[in-house]
Length: 261
Image (cartoon, rainbow, N blue to C red; front, side, top):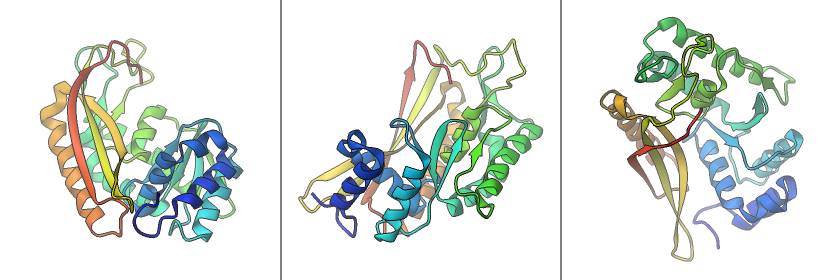
């Protein structure tokens, strides 16, 4: 079964199995679509959390995909602590520049007792943005084929920035009386962005591009920002030769008995 366009599904299966193993090869479609989403610039980076993999193997994987014409860009592989990311540095740099003006409105502080709130402290925004900037600089250093980054702020915030989320969690690690990232029993708005991929067999595949949340108590402030972000994503998708024929957004309120970020 081939996806419409120039995507060779059989080649992707073969390359993913070759470098990531048989288990990944059996469930290669989400990996394939996520890498293509990053290559298209619809997402700045992809967190590979399907199991441990040698960094050299992942570098070889994206290199072979690029050489075979399955991806257009030289994607960068790096680690944040022990987690491996595949990134489009052009998209990530653009996202970083957009966050300079936007982060103070979408950084959700969950470090205090009581309801979560928007962190309006400009020093916090400056600090976490400087961490993303350090990561970008490290990735762009000549000869740094596989950088590993250890941020000085909580990893959850760095992940949110790297993955392109329009709402990002933050907590003060020095606040020993705070909730330190615990969202148990907090009502959340769970946002999913799905992409639909046509196939030559007439079947439309559905893949998740984004999945994130924000506290329900901040819905009036954050949902307009999320919808604005999604419209920009639609516009961007419409200007590219994308694998997706359609993108859809869904928002649902959920409460989790235990959730610690």
